[in-house]
Image (cartoon, helix red, strand yellow):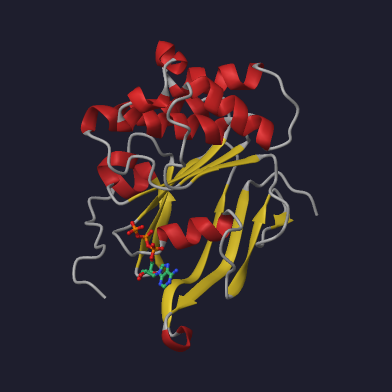
Amino acid sequence: ELSEVPLEITGLTKRYGKSAGRYAVRDLSFRVEKGQVLGLLGPNGAGKTTALRMLMGLVAPDEGEIRIYGHAVRPGAPVLSRVGSFVEGPGFLPHLSGRTNLELYWAATGRPPGDAHIEQALEIAGLGEALGRPVRTYSQGMRQRLAIAQAMLGLPDLLILDEPTNGLDPPQIREMREVMIRYAAEGRTVIVSSHLLAEVEQTCTHLVVMDRGRLVRADTVTEITGSGETLLIGIDGP
Ligand code: ATP
């Protein structure tokens, strides 16, 4: 049953609303191979967050199956140590340093102490000497990178990031892009959501384009950006 395929989802469906009649995610199927940086792209409301929350085991699908390295994912199932995830910036303790916040978080996960992975995650996140400063002195971009560093602790083989560039300005977005590229450079697998093609096209190897819960296209970035087609996503609303 074990597999080296980071992610395989089949027929994933989630409905909300009155008698669960609205589809947030509808019959979504795709597969992510080792070493890919997969961008989940789509306008607001396309279902990206819902899809990623199902992958993280935070939301139960109505239908479909999720396998991460061959393990079936469902809420309540143990979180695989091979997976790190970032959802909306978590709260840090503002008066403590970035480094101390991460050390406390790591200790709270109950995994063995040791600094090597913390140092590596911090280095990839590129926070430099700011790490020793209290988090309350950080800019939003720095907090966001600290949150990404937290998701990278233990250097998980698969990193899942929900809109890590949300609320950042262009220089901070570029820094975030560098962080993802550094992380993926060592053959790790990354899944990242965004609503802007420009944000992910230089980072990602592959794209899954979603609109109104459905998969619109899945291909390499080169195929998608080179095809000259317009990505018709979310232009005329639901
Ligand atoms: P965004 O970029 O705004 O986060 P998204 O692509 O991540 O958009 P989702 O947040 O997954 O999209 O939302 C998809 C649809 O599902 C939306 O219509 C949203 O209103 C609905 N939805 C999501 N979560 C819930 C919930 N807990 N209860 C009811 N409806 C929900």
